[in-house]
Image (cartoon, rainbow, N blue to C red; front, side, top):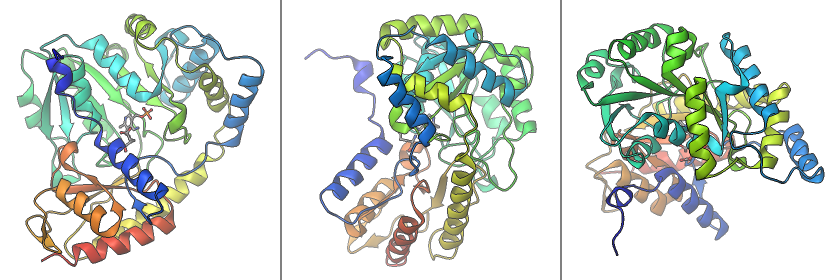
Length: 397
Ligand code: PMP
Ligand code: GLU
């Protein structure tokens, strides 16, 4: 078999693999608690579901323009204007099959083979693979673990070479929950301009903020940063629409055209029914969101308290998203029931086998001293899962 070297280097998504495994174990009747995928446990709000059902009944079941139906591009542009405070037109928006496709489209539009893309670690597991998928090379820049994963600006500037084409930003961050401040974003923008870089800014968790944290987008700085940035957002998180597959990009019109041409061959239009559902979603107030946020916030506080009162593990308070990074440094090198824990991957595997509790290992996110717990799951699961994690980490020798 003569296969692509490039594709054989792509690792499958560990988050999706763990999620699938936990769901299968549960379907087989096992009492699994999953802190795996970042998938809200809430149902998609009713008004969105009804809009989808109406779309099917009205016969909106055909192809649409590759970039999405004009009314949706227009509605998203208005939402962006409202959130960001700068002018945005339908031509700046491309509608995609999930923010995953938005990210890949953006990287396709920006990168050539051999280019380097800077990614801050810890990072979302899909970024390095996506960079490799477009033929570019991921370059990792460590953040300051002790300062809640803040950017290390010296390390950032030192990582820039002649081949650096772009950086990926993700604030609030998956997995660390770190939220970049205004000041940090402005410093990043100065470096981006100085070295003539592009930015892919993944802002999918922009509404999920705690403890008074504020979201600031690099696109809010000035027109030049808007031209240099492809902003990524989507419906999976704030609207609990993971399975609907809906994301979008906000960019300069010229880049939007390039991404549309690419998408017109790659996938064609995003799902038509989902587009109509999303049109309803963004045209009205998402009245269920404040309740979701309140619930996430209560779970986050409960988890932090429990983790920080458990021997051998600890966690810093994340300012955004719905993940807690748990430091397992003191457990690595020890054993549970005779099984040696040499890495975060071993930790996750042994924990699942021994206690039926699924967590995401930090290794594939560039943080092997950590595991990631998603609190997009019920309080009942959280209580049960944390009891199991406690007896596991306190039972290592
Ligand atoms: N970016 C980040 C940081 C994510 O955590 C996710 C998780 N799903 C995505 C993008 C992709 O989201 P989706 O494809 O479901 O829109
Ligand atoms: N982004 C979510 C996560 O990190 C969902 C799973 C995925 O798309 O990889 O868990």
